[in-house]
Image 1: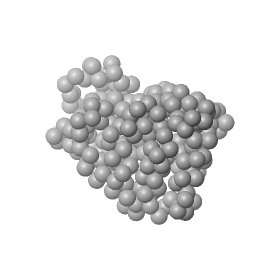
Image 2 (image 1 turned 60 degrees about the vertical axis):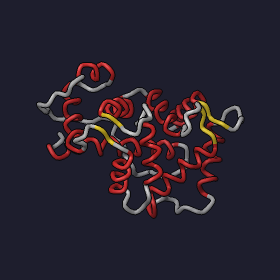
Image 3 (image 1 turned 45 degrees about the horizontal axis):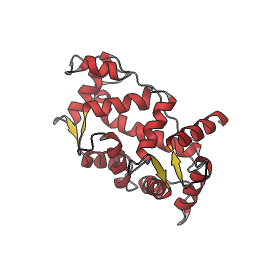
Image 4 (image 1 turned 120 degrees about the vertical axis):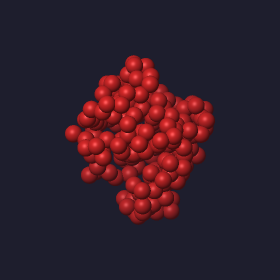
Amino acid sequence: MWTKGESEGLQTLGIVVVVCSSLKLLHYLGIIDLSDDKIEDELEMTTMCHRPEGLEQLEAQTNFTKRELQVLYRGFKNECPSGVVNEETFKQIYAQFFPHGDATMYAHYLFNAFDTAQNGSVKFEDFVIALSILLRGTVHEKLRWTFNLYDINKDGYINKEEMMDIVKAIYDMMGKYTYPVLKEDAPRQHVEVFFQKMDKNKDGVVTLDEFIESCQEVRTKL
């Protein structure tokens, strides 16, 4: 069970889950080696008394119970008294978890994925809906969310430039702990691997359908 201190840090935990999920996907694709990493798919939470407004609506929109939403809201408010998270907060969180690297750009891309309204802030509703998908959504829902993260310009495709930006951001974030040790041309090589596996019709971009199909193929082989 989560202690009080742990429950109050659920916002941070949720955001870290996102990067772990993304890194695991890249491991599946053979882009990075995370053989010893274990990703928890579920959270066990304790009861809190606070009940946020709109609880019933959020319960209907997510895979969380009322009790779990109360815990998440309490942790969110404790870390973000204003009720919203800005991009700088994301960057600060990642700087703490990846002190030997530079997480600035990955935090930027991740924030944009959470900020569905593209208004420069993430509300509790944005946070908990995304967290529900990443922790308890179907495989299809998780992959759709991850595709949106990689589709930086939101045009419905992932091109090589976007994937290069994401891979470089991940390596920068991991810093000296990157394995294998990053060579100068490693990001481009990994992008080529990504497109060889994902770009089914070889048109230079990866669609959502191609992305989901390829990831499910890799998942089946594991």
